[in-house]
Length: 334
Image (cartoon, rainbow, N blue to C red; front, side, top):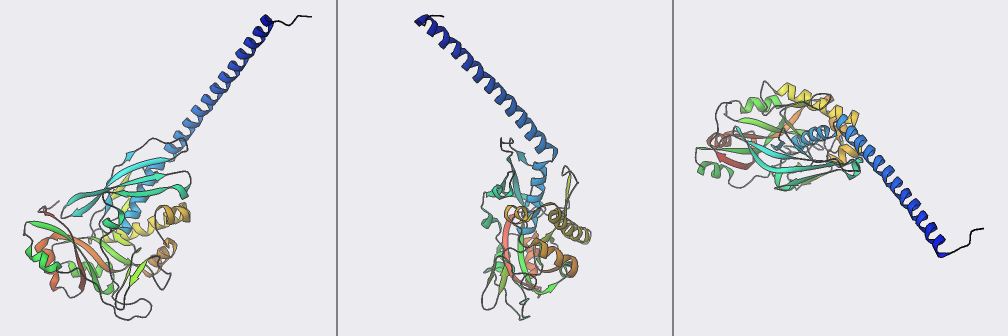
């Protein structure tokens, strides 16, 4: 039997340290391999399913519908995929003023594996500053009673004072509900481009809108949707198409693509993605209304030379006018 002594104790302790160190190294090596494999799998999954491209498309689509004359640029800046599969991307926001696009802010998208933690945030300026226009119903959808439209003070006086070498953005409501084609016909004599039309999608009769404002004699919906130039995308989200203005050449395709995009969202995404991530409330009801009842509008955003916008003062069907951004002359044929 070996006699216990200090030398033996040192050998045993040394051997134990070696074994412990080896075990720790093996664990670290295995953890490193697992981490590497996990990272590769996450990257492959995110790339294969085009998470960034899909998030880019749907957030821009929601922006098209929700915010008058504010759209996302074609490109985006993509961040690294996090260990938890979170994808972040950023793109610029623009308004069409005259014939040119003016950058007005940035939008940040954070898409996680769970929709509840995904988010959209706006920079320069905030969302409420981007959505600066209000549109007013000509009559109450529930009772049919006629309503008034609040207007921005001295819009026509301001347009009259502005130099003729400028172009601007004008929003207005209409004195009656009408088809998009009827509004286009009303505006045909004027040298303006129609950028966005306020839609009635069954609010108050088919569903209760999430946000609305009313007084004794006016009514507006804050979470309403609008019709704008068509945005479409390929099945893999890698190529897309965008139309800027609404005219006789683009109106039918723009309506068709809007219904198609709504249907695709409802088929592919759950309520959490649609309502809480994209901020699109009552999309199912709105989709059914547009399919069954067609498109009805009661306002629009247009752009053109300021003196041409001033001519709209004489148009009896226009009310609730609001002046947006003004830029130096760029009204040239594209």
